[in-house]
Image (cartoon, rainbow, N blue to C red; front, side):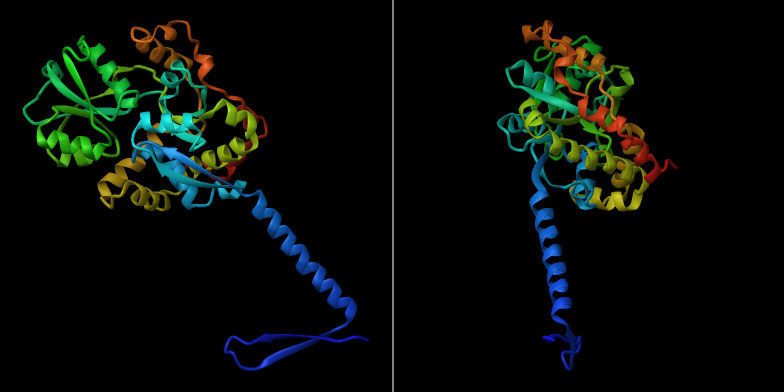
Length: 353
């Protein structure tokens, strides 16, 4: 009988245990080790790595952050690297260029009307939860006539919100109400402090900061009752067609992240703090409460909301007049997961409180 010695050093680094195995047993051990190595190699090969863009530091983007930090994308075979893209317009342009291949954004409609072929595969908002903040001294919305209103960028959600506001006040954009592209929330707050703009929109996450800086909120756009297609998970139709399995697995992690946030407040808030770059307890609490208030567990598209945006764009973009809402979204992956019982499974794993 052939004998083989296998040694192992103790934790203290002294002493050595020896086990004597028969040749047949050694072959079985070797085969088992090779099998583990092969499985690990397959797992490594199957783990797809992609970047996913997000255009703001608002809580509406937080399921991407939580999915990354809690390993919920990785759970489904995808390593997602979140990347901050400065505003909806920049995020959409990057998506159109193909990198990142997926973005959580709300500006697909305008992009497609200019010739791109992007598509929403999940929808997280059907209203704009943006608040109109003004500098001290302005006490009514009517006083915004002739003033400068900062938006994050043209083609962004704040741009759409500005058009809704102007329509509500019967003001003409860039005649009665001057729009100024001002970048992310922090930069627009700086512009308001400096007096270079008179008003801006801030989301429910950053509203507490704006109030602490002395700005006053006069209106939440959602209160106007307008149904609008907001942020959602977007990709290109080419990527959806060529990498449908990747999109589906990303979607699983994306959806589980939403349910995780609902169920795990403290763990979620730690992730919020990291990505929002804030340890302000009021901001974190407000962000969490508004998340569970406004983000649905089960995403649904709003053709009515898409049509509203098309109607807004029609005066400047004639092609919007003939476009149909169905051109801008694809519910195929969501419907497939629904039929497979994925939402039921998530509900059991993360029961509503």
